[in-house]
Every structure is written in C-alpha cells, then in structure tokens.
Amino acid sequence: MSVDPWSVYSGNALAALSHISNNDCSFPLARTLEVTFVSTRDNEQNVTVSQDIEANISAFVQRIRQLAPRLNMIKMSGGPDPMERVDVTYLYFGSLTTQLVQFTSRIDISYGFGKAFHFLNADAIRNLTYLASRFELGGEQTVQLIRQNAPTLQYLHVAYRCVNISSIIQDADGSYVEYPHLQTLEVNRGYDSRTPLRYKFDGAVPFPGLRRLVCVNEYPFGDALVLFRGNAATLEFLQLTMTRELAIALPQSSIFTATSHPKLRCVILKLHPSMMPVNYIDDPEIIQFMMDIAPDAAVRKISKWCVNQLPPRLLSLFGKHTSLQVLDLPDLRLSIWNAMTLIQSLPLLSDIHAAAPTLDPMPDGATARNVVAYVTSNYSPMGTRFRCWHFGCDFSRRMKDKVKPFLLLVLACPNFDYAAAVDYEREKFVKLLEKTIGMVAYKKHAPRLRRLLFGGWTNSFLHSPNSTRGSGNGSSQPN
Image (cartoon, rainbow, N blue to C red; front, top):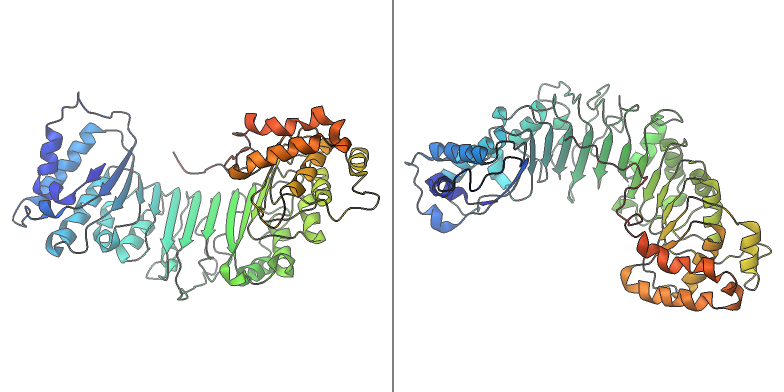
C-alpha cells in the first residue's frame, strides 16, 4: 500500500477509506501490511499545523485496523522528502509510524526513512517478536527500540556502518542487555572506510538461545566470543565473514570443540575483502578454524566463497563430515579423481556446487584410452546418494573438456543424473554430451549415460541452487 503522509495529516486518506464499506473491501485474514510512504507536494500545501493532525492520524490507523483486524506484521519503506516542511514532517511522521506499528508484534523497516525514523516514539512500542532495521543503525530512538524489546524479540536484523553497535548489548550505565528468546540474529555492516568502535564484554551472555547467526561483511565486536557464549547447545546455522583477526581469535578461544555444538548443521564462511589478495585456503589459521568450527559428523552443508584449490588437509577435513549432504564451493576446482574420493568418503552427499571437474592429473594406471575401464573397475559403484553437480561458467576451459568428467561420474555414481550448467551454456553442453556418448569408449554405456541428458529437467526443482533440501538451512524466524 502506498501512503502519502500529507494526505493522512489533512484527513483526505481517511475520507477515501471511509467511503469503502467493510463488506466491499476488508481483509479479515491478512497478517502483513506493506506500506511505502510517498510524499506529493500538492498535498503538502493543504496542511497547516493548526489542523487536528493527530486526530486524523489516529482515525486513519483505526480504519486500517478495522479493515485488517488480524495484522501482526508491518513492513515500512520510503519516508518524507528532505525538502519537506520540517514543522510538520518531524512532528507527525513519527506519530504516524508509531501508531501503525503499535498494534503489531513484528516490524520490518527498509531503506528510505532517514532522520524521520529517529522521531519514532520508541517507548510506546513494546513486546515485539520480530524487528528488522535495514537502514543505518543510529540515533538513540533506534537503539532504545531494540533494547527495550530485548525480552521478547525472537528475530533481529541490524544494519550499521560506523556507529557503536555495542550499544545493543550494553546500555548507557554499563549494564549488559540480554535477549533470552532471540533465535535469529543478522548483523550487516555496510561499506565504510572508518573503523567502528569495538568493545569487549567480559562475561556477557546476550544471546543464550540463538539458533541462527549471520554476520555480513564484518564481525561487529572486539570480543570474538560474545555472540557465541551460552548458545553452543542451540546454534544450528552460522554464517561469518572471515577476517584475519577472527580467524586467529576463534581458534584460540577453544569455543568450538568436537562436541560443543551438537545442532550446528550449516556453516557458511565468506572472505572479507581485506584478505582477498592472499591464498587464504592454505592459511594455517583458517584451516585450523574450519577444523575447530565443524569437527564432528553432524554438519550437513558447508559453503565458502573464493576457494579455488583444495589442499590435502582440507580434503581430509571434509571427508570427516560423514553427514554432509551439500558442499557449496562455487569457485572450487577439483579433479574428477579428488571429487570421487570425496564422494566415497561422504555417504550422504547429494549435491556439489563447484567448478566443472577436470580429468587431469590422471592417477597412476589411468590413460586417455583406458579411462572408462579404469573408472568402472576402481570406482563403481559408489556415492549412491549423490545426484547433482552445479557448475558455473568458466571461460578458461573449453566446454568439451567439461563433458567427459561428468560422464565418468555417471559410471561411478549410480544415481547421478544432473550436471547443471548455467542456462545459456546448457544447450551446447547437452549437444556435446550426445556427441561424446557416441564415441567408441562410451558407446557401450550409452543407455546409462543418456540419463544425464534428461535427468536434470525432471529434477530441476529439487536440485535448484536455492533448494534447501537436506541443507539444514531452514528459517528460524518466528511465525
């Protein structure tokens, strides 16, 4: 719903809604209201501070509640034009937004509010279970809104740049704030060249029941442990952007041990831009951290960016995750031989997201002439759960060099039926598959190999890159 605040102030919006009867237009089952505030200067000219603006706002909100009595979530975006009249904008926009959210328990604030949101009457908004603040965190009103709803919040998304985000954990008098029911915390730092203030919180346990933790772009606190204290028994999903400091601090803390996080099922590690120039996958601290963060057999999905090599230590590490179902390393380059070794060691693995595998280097005893016989003799059958390999575009390799490894994988894995090329390469890939299947070395296995031509189309939904099948990546947001 698009709302012009000035039409609300003047009473025009209420007049328009009043002409609609509940029988003609009502939403008795609606649970979510999406509001985009769009100001027009024509309506602005019709508003004076002498009007009973507060009464018009209250009546408008009450009418919304009559039309949709079961609303429990409001999503707001947009906001006043910076050129608008300050006397009305900052007096009444906060009142309008405050009254709209007062009868809900879930609010989602998107970009565009600017300074106007700082005039929200945060003290009047309590018992929230869901709060997403997707604009720059700043202003005492915003921080107050988060802290005073700490006892009831189950989902919290905070965006910030260079402000002191520590204020959501520690109030002005130094007391720690606890979020006893919070299940999902997402912290997103936007780009800023300045370094934010970082504080340590000795002994603080602000998030004791956390199930899902996402830190985008940078870990926000000087205390590497504060987000992990007290929730080892509940944490299921972890996404971190790795910095050098974090990669050193977490292993040293010993907070991750072989039995410390029994419910952790999905681990996503992303690389901070400050570490891009180094080949971090061979970095001892990073590998040690990976071994500490997910050492047991419970993890079902591992995902990481900017990995293009798999050293033996890391290959061995992945092989220990016997419950692993999804390996999502889109830049990883594997030989077909390393891939099959990995699949052999992971009995539940069903999906790999990585670059198309290579044939080279060949193992001892395998040659271009006998490679089909070599695979059927040494690797078949294996990986009975493995079904899908997603690979992206790689202009450094010819398409025909990508085809043979996948055909060999079909021979080794009895249920592998989907090599998922990007859309604009799919037709060329299929044509080369058909051509290669007709070659002498592969022809006698043609009935089996031809499954690769069609399996992907019938199972494309199950194997789509966004599928959460078996990943443990279910949302823990409250209803």
